Structures are given as structure tokens and as C-alpha cells.
Length: 421
Ligand code: HAM
Image (tube, rainbow, N blue to C red):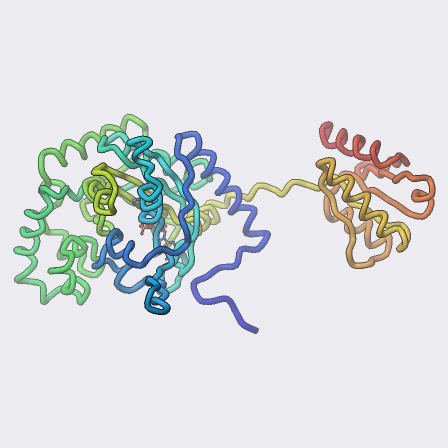
């Protein structure tokens, strides 16, 4: 038997009850906050990720699912490792910024990263998130965090923490980068292999290295080394979060693993997730939209991992919403009534009722067992006698009461039963 690939998951009906509840909550909350859905394709031109996610990131260097060019005219394509670049590209390509300068969009969809699979870390996973494009206001940073926290709360994730940081802007990051290189350069031989590689390529990532955490703790915090404008922005974000009642802490070690961030960065983690503790993360990316061919506007957003939210819900023992019970289960009292029964079932479904019938040629007794197991409120029984009289027998499963009525009337009776129960 060929099994599913490592790092993928099958979602079976039992899993999907909780999954769909989360998806409904996410859509409801994003809608209430005024975010509109976008749905870019699953794969994009590979260069899109080089230019936005960043050439020196782990994602682009090691984790992309890339399909090389086929023939001379074709491009290289990559299954999206994140949805931010595709969402922004889609708006730029549709000339959306000519219609309005400010956009709030959300997405829900698969992402792909060739990582070593473990609990909470998959090769195909699902992200939901938002991008707010066209504003440099700190309040929109606050809103993206607040909407994320509200979703978690409404889903039933009770244990999570919000950590925020600022990583400066194009104007002040260069100086801090040089300062860090100056301090770290002479001692870099004592750091892990990853840090050694990052000294020249992306020195900020050394700050969030878990292996060398003790050594980096002594480094000057980035929050005190950004320019006055960045400090003011960060102060306003903190004030906004406090005013909106979102609990948070400042963590100068958060730098995020993607290249496009400026100023505010944040992560929301859960203690119930183990080593892959981030439920989601995001931040501001002023400069990204312009670098992708769009207008010179600020942007901010986050993405969360659906599979990780579900693990947190499991830990919190949140029950999935029970599936709605069917209105009826149809039973053929004689084998030759099956074809007519199927037409009757179709007529009832066409009236908006939900119900099913047996497709395994089972005995009447076994069909009644299925009716019981399905939780249906009514059994609809059809045999030779009913066919001759052009009626169906409707049996109330709760009290056993039966009446023989034409199909039209049966539909009304079953629908009434639904509204009164
Ligand atoms: P990210 O931190 O790379 O950010 O991913 C966001 C979330 O996706 C993570 O916190 C995690 O919950 C989930 N995730 C990432 N990789 C995996 C994986 N291999 N398996 C399961 N879940 C995973 C971004 O993707 C940015 N686009 C967020 C953003 C939006 N920044 C601004 N706008």
C-alpha cells in the first residue's frame, strides 16, 4: 500500500468537525473586522519568494518545493511556503491600488515547506492570516494582533502569549547591524555553525538562536538601538495594545525568519505546543510592496498555523461542535421499493430536508438500525402497500407515532418536526 508522504496529514470526517469550526470562526471574525478574502494560486514564480521572503532565509535556502523550468520558455515554479507574497502580488497585478490606497485582506489556504516533520511541523500545512496594506499607522499593527487574539479566544485557545519587538527601519537598521557585527565578529568562532554563517548574511538572526541564547543575552537590545521614529512607533503599538486589553510582553529576541520585516514584529505562542510553540507570527513590512512593483506604502500582517491551533484546542479539551442530525432516514420495506424510495428521498432533499437511505441492500431490520444510529428524527418507510396508495409512512423516531401521507405532506410534516424540536 502506498502511504501518504511524510509531513502531510489526512483530514477525515472526525477531524473536520473541529477544523471547520475553526475555519468558520476565522471567517466570521475577519469579516467583522472588515478584512476581504483573497485566494492566490498554490504555486508562484520561484523568483517571487527570492525577492520577498528573502534569499538568505531558511525558507528560501532550504525549504522550498520547487518545480524546475520545463523547456526553454517555462519559468521555475514554487509551491508557496507562505501566502504573504502571493497575496500582495495579486493586488498589485490587479492594479487594486489604483482603486483605493488602503486594503485589508485575509486568506486561508495551504502552504508548503520542506522541513523535518515533527509535532506541529508539517510539509503541507494551512495558514490563515491578514495583510493590511497602505498605512504606516501603529494602530493597524495593533489591530492585526487584536484580531488574531480574538480568533484564538473565540476558538477556545485559552493559553497563549503575545510577544512583540521592533527591529527598526531602513534608516536605523544598518547602524545596529554594524554594531552587532563589531561585537560578534571577534567571538564568532565560539558560536554554532548557523550563527557563523549568519554573521555576514543576516546578523539579526543570531539574536534568536536557541543554541547560543546565553551568549546573545548580553548583546545590546535592539529596542534601544532603533531611531526615534521607530521608538515612537513601538511606543504607540504598546499603548494601543494596552488600550485594547491585549496582554503582551516585549521580547527583544524576536527577529522573525523572513527578510521583509521592519519595525513591529510579533509572535503568539502556546505552552501546549512543545518545541514548535508559535501559533502564528507577523509584523510590519514597509518597503515590501514597493519592492514588488507596487506603490510605496506601508504594510503589516500575520499568519497562523491551523494545525497548531488545533493542537492547542486539543490540549484545552475543546469539543468540536456536534454534527447536525439528519431530518430523516428512508427505509425500503421490500427490495422492489428501492428505486421508488430513491426518488422519494430526492424529492424530500429538494425540499431542503437532509436524509439518507441504504445502499447495501440490507434487511428492513438493519435499515431501522441505521435509522437509529443516524440520529434522524423520522423514518420514512415505503413498501408495496404504500406504493400502491401513493403514500409514505412517516415514523417519529422519538415516540414511534406513524402516519401514512403523500410525499408532499410528509415533507411538511418532517420540516415541522425540525422547527418544533
Ligand atoms: P511564519 O512565522 O513563517 O510567518 O509562519 C506563520 C505560522 O505558520 C507559524 O507561526 C506556524 O504556526 C505556521 N507554520 C509555519 N511553518 C509551519 C510548518 N512547517 N508546519 C506547520 N505550521 C507551520 C509567515 O508565514 C508570514 N507570511 C506571516 C506574515 C504575514 N507576516 C506578515 N504578514
